[in-house]
Image (tube, rainbow, N blue to C red):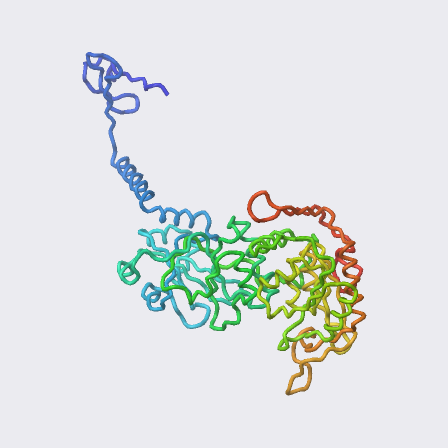
Length: 507
């Protein structure tokens, strides 16, 4: 822009202003007439600075100062205003009840308000409490924010308190404090040790969430905040899965006395609200499952979806202490071996997650009674054959669609085999009647017809060879350890879904 044109030669009365005199211009600002040197570069301009202008300048200078030296506070404020439902930055957890109480962690009778507290220390913590979005502040609990786990997690709520860091903390816990850099996911009681639940109700949704928020596989920190009952920890299978996702730090109550957390997310969608029994996918293959499986296999130094050995058959058996034990497996294995098949029998519950992966990675067929022994079919080659055996309870086949739905999403071909014999049941000692449980879980021993099961296995292998996933393209990713998966055919064929079979309801 050009310089302002000043009426430097005349006063308001129109008379020529004497050299060095001052006069108001059109805007009311005082101007100085040119000196004898007469050049515009020698003009001197006086501006009346009001107290309001001085105050605004001071506020801007202070803001810039704090932005440089207390960036965490600015980030906290920006986070509160723009992403209230995602992450919390720079939290501290003290694994000490007395310290938490001294810092003001709310504790009331009843499980609902028995909080686990995390702290966000900032120079202007109290100020930020007031400017933060009010919907995130929980005055009843005296928490700046409260996060509650999903109903499926059975966990206590988490309280995030914010304020100034007291001076006595540095004496109690000398700095630097241990820090988890990157993203930490704090979960409730998780899904329990059941492999099917761990894979489909927790880790599958964790994988989808990590993709959404760009957290790379292998980098996530995981902490479980369980109840006193240890039964809802991830279990051996879940811990094996967790190793591929990142760093499993175990239970919150077993964490060090103080831990800094760079970026925290509390709980993830999924849980038992995601019911595999009711899932009806509009595509027969879910690429998220295949991409997750590729990451897990590569973590354990296995080639994702390698070519199946056409003669390898794995028969999954169950521990003697478990329900639905398969009777007659040895005879079935012997018959298949005589036909030239390479048959392996394995008690899956006695194996680690990694050992299960090595067993299924190149198997053509997996055979077993309905249950979690079959869930590792996800990591088998494309078009692997799965034979799921169902018990017959008091003359009625005890069917459950959970694994059939999973097989569709995993890109596998599953066929059901119903035992022609009644299963041996668990009986209630007081009444002598079957225990109060769904029929499939009342079964203790599941006998099979050797010839009938062998024929079912051969038929399923043949069907898997004939099944074509038209429109499915899977290739190694150009970068990283994942795969690129695209499926362009949303409507499955009858042979893939088996819609002509009565057990595949709602196809």
